[in-house]
Structure formats: C-alpha cells, structure tokens
Length: 234
Image (tube, rainbow, N blue to C red; front, side, top):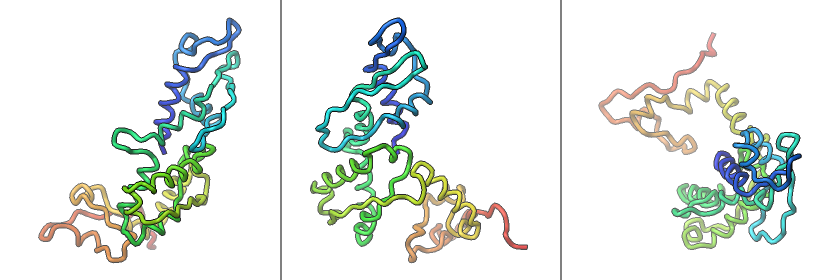
C-alpha cells in the first residue's frame, strides 16, 4: 500500500534534509558524501525509524540517528514521520488512501456498505508502520462527516481487524492457498483470453451472478475459461 511512493519520497527527503557526521566533519550534506542511498538502506530506514503521526501532530519528534555505512550517521529530523504524510494528503483530484477506501465502499451495494465498513482488513508492508492504522481510522472518521460520504455511506462505524498472518505476507499466503485448491480455482477464475474478449469479471460474491459463459454475446463462441493446472482425478 503505497510502498514505492514512500520510498521515492524518502529518497527525496534524505537528499534534501539529511546531514552526515563523518571522520572529516559533521553536518555534511548527504549528496556531498554519497551520490545515492542504496534501496536496501532506504527500506531499512523506513522499517526501523519511520512511523505515522496522529492526526493532530502536536508532539515534537526527537532527532533520530541511523548508521549508513559504519563510518557515518545520517540524522533524520522531523521527516521520519512526515514521509508517510503523502499517503493522506489529498492530490488535485482529492484522492488519498482514506478517500480511495471510502470511494470503494460507496461503489459497493448499499446493503453491504455497513457490514464492509465494520470489517476492514489492511494488508501490505506499509500497513505495519507504527501509527498507520490509527491515522487511517482518524482520516476516515474525519472524511465521513463530509457531504460526499455522509449521505452515501450512512454509517460512522468503521473497524479494522487484524489479518490472519503478518500484513506484509497475507496477500501471498491467500493467493498460495487459493491456487492450491484446484477445484475452487477452476470455478472461480477466468482465463486471460476470456477477459480480453469480454472485459468482464464475474462477481463471485453474488449468488445471482450468471455463469461466465452466459454473459458472453449470444451467437458467438465464448473463449475458454481457466484451465486447471493439473487434474486430481486418478
């Protein structure tokens, strides 16, 4: 969830605001010592030091230090919590992580919105940042008071549940389990050819959804559905 965007923002902030203490001097600008910060170091900085502040951001954050190459230390100022602000700042189209979630709920059937809003599961490595879930809920509760969402959702109850595994590997685990269930995979998936020709994906959650072959134009031979990778029959 926004991991690449955070990495890009962190790269930019490190170059613009960070200073280094080395054997040759202190308070040196990062670009004068190292041309670019390795991606694995950026990931390490994000995981170890970055967090998401609360909505009000009233507390002053103490300066943190991170060993860059053993002989220098990078001083991260207040941006260790501001790097994730880009996820919550609305762009020109008034889009943010919170608005994307609310917009998705608005597109769901009206009788399912309340149930879905009370059963949110947030996954991905970014969701593991300290304070992220609390901030997301605060943003949602603030936005839901606006007319755009207040009338459409008609609910103020939002709950985030813990995933069954670590958030950064839940999607992979779910896909691995689903892919191993060949009988289910065959009836709950379509081939790329089918999607390219129809442009549709059935709503598997709706019992009234017609079979995939019935949504194809009449008189034409429908493309093949997903073929099983192997057969369990003897």
